[in-house]
Each structure stands twice: as structure tokens, then as C-alpha cells.
Image (cartoon, rainbow, N blue to C red; front, side, top):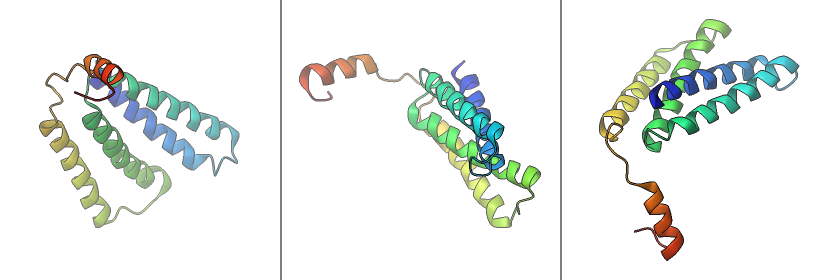
Length: 127
């Protein structure tokens, strides 16, 4: 379920960014409202996904894949140039996301954060 939430968070972030472009600097009411709605939705879904995915992995995937998809949206919807440098950069983002997923312990157990938080609150230091 956390991975589904992360994918939905990415889709909402891409939608929010698309509506940001369509809002013309907050001069168009409906796209301006939709950009706020989709960004709030995206951050909420990301927050829920963090219950089951380490923050370093989830944020790398959320920001990296969101960036890659926005490049595609810019090309398809807004006629932005898709240069060789942009394509290579998107490939590097995807390689980085895969690397974070494979090397980030995303499928392993995280340390008990409640125990760490309790330790910080009672001793003033992280154990």
C-alpha cells in the first residue's frame, strides 16, 4: 500500500505542477485552486507513504520521478523542447531512483522510530 500511495503522490504532484503552469502566475482562478489542491493531496499522500517507505527513498522517488514526468508533460502539452541533455538527465534521474531503491533498504525493516523519539525526549540525545 505505501508504494501505491507514493505513485499517487507523484501523479498528484505532476498534476499540481501542470496546473501551476496553467495558472499563469495565479492569474487564472480554477488552475490556481487546482494547483493548491493537487499539491496538498500530493504532500498528504507522500506523508502516508512514509509510514512504510524510508524517507530518503520515498523523497528521492517522489522528486525524481515527478521531475521526469513533468519534463514529459512540458514536451507533450506545452511544446517545450526535449533536448539530448534533457533526455540524458532524465535517464540519470531514473538511474538514481533505481539506485536509491536498491541500495536504500526500502524493503527492509526501519528502526523503531517511536523508541528513538522516546530516547530523544527522555535523554535529550539520540541513542
